[in-house]
Length: 295
Image 1: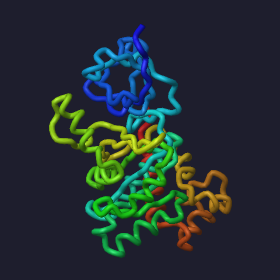
Image 2 (image 1 turned 60 degrees about the horizontal axis):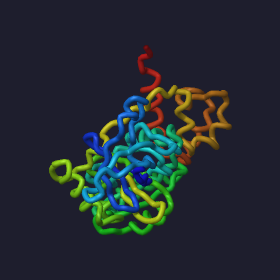
Image 3 (image 1 turned 180 degrees about the horizontal axis):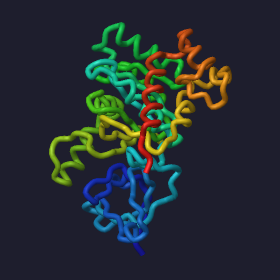
Image 4 (image 1 turned 90 degrees about the vertical axis):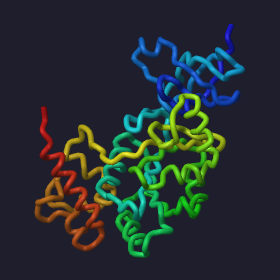
């Protein structure tokens, strides 16, 4: 009987899955039963495999263990939290997109940590603005320089004992931070790219790196846009945690915080207790959901 080995899928590309096991990295194909059952292995899945060629480190995935959760975008499984990375400058942060990321992670019931990168090249005003906008949002915030490795140990403490998916737009330094946390990342990426005859690494696929015991970080492709999915406009305010304590002061139940009089949220906005940038993003997203065509 073939020996079964358990491991974690750290990358899937072109029909091959790379599984991190106590025997090293094994290149696997998924058995046909997955297609038959309509199941696709995902990065982050805990898998059981058998070796087909031990010398060449090749095998077959024969089954997946049950998933704790599954994310749609990025497509991955068994994640504990999201590290959402934006640059404070170069590129200038798109706070509307950042709010979309936060909402998307909350929709998938995933705690999020905001990480503002490139502090080393930002002005004092740029650094202060980013922090000020999100200081009352209820999210943990990290201010770092991946290039200068400032704040990397703080990120490492935040990741310990968890599987963390890294998300954010292109060009904000996600891979720089992953490489700072795990210097072998480029080497492992290159090894996989060589096996599948791909060129120089840019993150086009999700990949998981083991940082320590029960500690993994997942690098993902950058996004330039993000849909809110099938959310109703009435649900939106629940994804702005800082609105919560002021909503009870609204005159009307189910207040949209847009045009109603005696709105606790708008009063808090006028008293500078809520960030005008966050509120404006809320208003724009509310109008987007309101005007969305329904079929």
